[in-house]
Length: 424
Image (tube, rainbow, N blue to C red; front, side, top):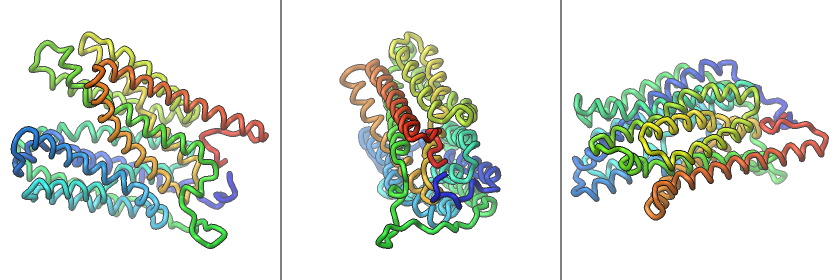
């Protein structure tokens, strides 16, 4: 262990209870956040958008505004969490999300809806905040399992939300659905406030020779593993989201009945998420045993291989099976990426650096669909799958090279090193 971290606690004694609260809170808040997807265009039209093009355009702006804002402030919330407490960041996020979501049910114009979507991105981030809290409080030898379990809850919330959003508006109306979502998030706020326990923060911020406080990145001794994980997280989301814009069009080529296209497309999209939910906890536990970087390299390689046959399927069920298998392979990637970062940064700046990781992933989420749509429109549907396979393969090779070089450098120095835990 590095001297600078000798006095830092290994983990929070309440980490199991905190994990359970973060799991339940992330699941419910993400259901509330994603249930608007099926009826967002209808609500935009109700608020005054006229014509198909305007409805689609404003729906896209309203949906993307949250991710854009969240990407900008994630490192800031991470840094403030390091300084003032990570529980406080979850309390802030859940209360802000509850208020903004409730107000969305009262807006009178599209501009007001977009503004609230921006605010919810600026104020929110409950699931990313939960990931940071769990990563920094869990024993390092259990971090893969804990983060995998949390990731399964996050993905389940993303999966269930649109289903709930499709069922509720016909029963209670769109505006009442927003108010109900706000109430659900408020329950997460109460659970977070009264059930999560965080130990007092005693470590003073590191300072330079001139007395100025060091930035979070400056306090990372070996930046190579962390930089590799930031790039890998961005690459993962880029590769995953690049497929999304062309799924429905691709399925239409495989399904003869036009009336079944949307149903089959929904199943295909859900298949990968279901696979990830089922495998996240197991892969996290496996990573705790064999090494998080080993699982990252293997998962990227397997996912790249599974993308190739997806470009040449002839039946929709074949695509469903391959997407499910790909989801199984990718389920543990984000937890493992988070674990490697957590093992290679001082505890006092972990939230700051993990906030950078969240921002990098948001960049991938934005760039992926843009690139996928461009490639699909100019070079065909198959080219998207094949190009994404190449990206995954490059990612696996790059991670293997970085890990090998780190291990070689440690061996030359006569210091046997586990690449996931450079702070040892």
